[in-house]
Length: 314
Image 1 (tube, rainbow, N blue to C red):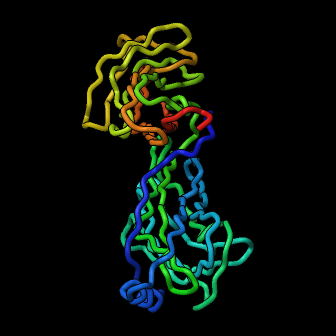
Image 2 (spheres, rainbow, N blue to C red; image 1 turned 90 degrees about the vertical axis):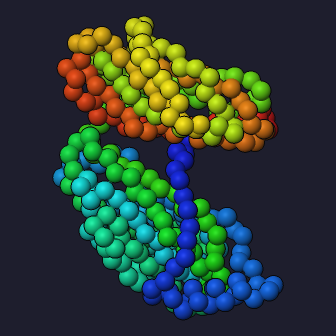
Image 3 (tube, helix red, strand yellow; image 1 turned 90 degrees about the horizontal axis):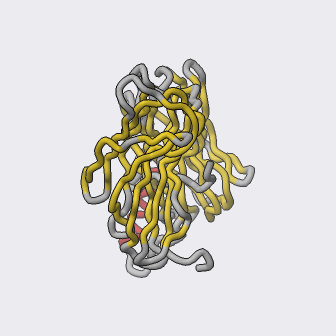
């Protein structure tokens, strides 16, 4: 399985609450000519297990790497409360220094707001996590929940905003025995074409599948979808279509009541490269569903990939 980091959407916004004094100072400093927030380009990532088992508990850390002079943070974490539910939030840790949780609360049934803060004027640098969020698994096998982080704000010891990209994650309730993975070249060349396979391994009695594949159409664009193959058996593409300029929906299906077992790929998606060198596009697979010959769902983990334009030596 590819170890490349799977990209998810991120965003940032304003803060309030226990760090209100820091935020006011930040806003004032941004309004003063010559006072500019640091452009560090940090990344805050929701780090969750890919698969969790029904009836169990698990922890999610809010990770950050190589941050400088960190003092405080705020974020909202949203989830599907019919699948998982937050039961507590514990202190974070950066390079061995404790990052205290000032407050946390349920904004609604599906969202918690978390504030973490060092003493005013103190800062810590390094890598680790801002907080650890504990969940109970309340759904059943096959359910999944996105863990969406929003309303994020990082502040340093001088009360300046630390710009950051905030990255979501997802958990699936297992056990999961099948993984479906987008398999793309790491690098592609401007003006050329390439193929992406939707790989699956050790699947049993497979009959049909559906999925959406999203991409950045300013970088790459789908030109066709061809049949898949499992252990030499053709998996016919029933239909494929553009949902919008950046997404195609694909349906593959064997005849009703027939099933095939083994490893291979569900479909082959052809792309043309329309972007420029060092442009990149996530190939995000979603809304995936596998069914066996008895029309029962096959629980699976669906894994994204990414392509970058340029020679491997670039």
